[in-house]
Amino acid sequence: MATDGKLNNFLNIMVDPKLITAAIDLGIKVASRFFTGTKKEEDLISVGLAVGYFYNFLEPVSQLLKMDNFQLYKSKEDPTPRKFSISQLDSVDILLPKVLNVYAFERCEEEYAKSQRGIVHFNSRIYGVNYILNENSPTPLTLIDLARPVMAIKHYYEVVAGLNTQDATDVKWIKTQISEISAFKSAISRLQERGYGALINKLDFKERG
Image (spheres, rainbow, N blue to C red):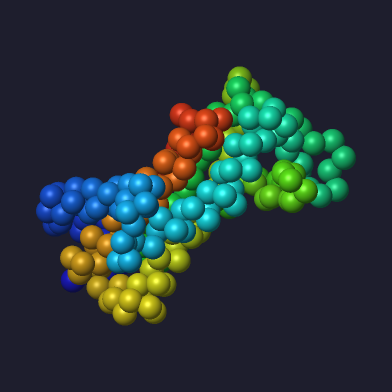
């Protein structure tokens, strides 16, 4: 039996590609139902998580860039924030696990920790943002964020749904993971396309496993 740490190899070698394709398609269809008002009670939880994540991170970033008012403070006490325009933004990298296990979570956390921490102000609120600067580039700013809501999906299926998430070879759990992650990404992309064009072609999902 494969352990959690070997799930990526298991997916790549032993799982029928048709299962993976079907799981991805399911995630996309669930997101589509949400945005067309035909959501079902049994639909995946990741769409709701994606909506909350979007409005707590991507929406403020998008608005500030659209208004040409993205000012990055190194700390609350920073008297001279640095202003960046949309043309100076290389990408917004969203880190998320490829599979829902502790090893993938740790890889995401490790990569996230390599970025710098700053803050921006939007609608009288302070938002923490992580970033990487490449001063030698015409697009020096890369924003980095860790999609932690995705990690909560595993806890939900363990505690609420009673699914055995410890068996990395369980076909139902494999399909559920792929579907939920796909739905999360699809929902974020759809929200981004609905009036928040500042980040179109700037979002980059970085899956780590």
